[in-house]
Amino acid sequence: MKKSKDGIKLASPKVRKFARELGANVVQIPGTQRAGRVSEEDVKNFIKSQVTVNKGSIEKKEYKEEFSHKEFGEIELKDIPRVKRLSGPQLVRSWTEIPHVTQHDEIDVTEMEQFRSSLYDYYSGELIKVTPLAFIAKALVSALKEFPNFNASIDPNQNKIIYKKYFHIGFAVDTPHGLMVPKIRNVDQMSIKEIGEALKKTSKLCRELKIDKKDFFGGSMTISSLGGIGGTFFTPIINPPEVAILGVGKSFDRLVKIKNKIISRKILPISLSYDHRIIDGAEGARFCVYLGKCLGKDFAFKLAV
Ligand code: CAO
View 1 (spheres, rainbow, N blue to C red):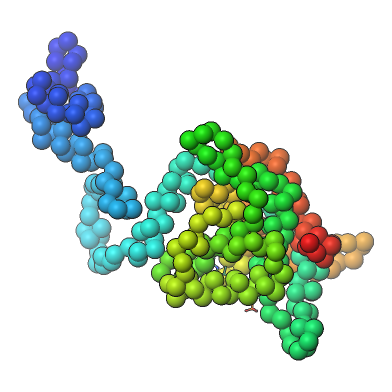
View 2 (tube, helix red, strand yellow; view 1 turned 30 degrees about the vertical axis):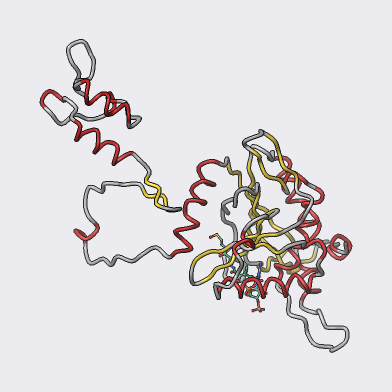
């Protein structure tokens, strides 16, 4: 950076004033004039390259790539889908502002899975198809009751923690338009079957873009289940103003030795991300252990609430 002999960056008082008015420090602006002198044009270019332009809800920064992509082969330009454009800034805010911790764990869901696949309607005798997610939602509500810090939000204006007395669970729904996270209200008052039905109904509304905007707000905690697709552990991003999110992978069979016998057990991988400003690691671990109990061999006692 070129400076005058006495170490002060070269720029006319007019340019200095112009930079100051735009909130820029002239010392940081690269000058293109003789001896590194900063011109008004330099100030404008600097501001353009630094400032985050807010166009509605889209955050757009200008980046200058050294080489254009098309210099390396054929490319195609497409618009970012609307839902992704809207959720992008929210994801950036979460990732950059919240100190995330992600804890991975495995839950033995053998008994729960046996029960789930043997569910029949009492009156019609028909098989009831409920995915593991409905059980996981029920278990999550139980864990939220036990660990209220997970059913909370930070109020940054008053420097307080808001504890929610309701249990509205958010579900990440994969749609052709992008990811949506609607809430299912009062899950604590629903049966497993009702949760299963609400899941189907709500995800259909999302995929058909018929969901009410308000249904994306006011959640306790979110479940992001990739269990119907595949994979084990991942690092889910918290959906603010919530303070935690539960990621669920696809359950798999594992051979284990119990009482000198090798038997097959069904294992569910989970990934819990939480806001470390509110939740400590020990509490995160306890939460996972508790969830394990709710979905483990005594699930029927734990979930019968
Ligand atoms: N382990 C094993 N199998 C599972 C499972 C798990 N954890 N979770 C679901 N399955 C099975 C279901 O039982 C179902 O099996 P059948 O076809 O035999 O009935 C199948 O996988 C498909 O389930 P599903 O995904 O349709 O239903 P769901 O209730 O589990 O999930 C929904 C509903 C809306 C959450 C899901 O459709 C979806 O959109 N998932 C993607 C979420 C996502 O994108 N998360 C990432 C967010 S971060 O970018």
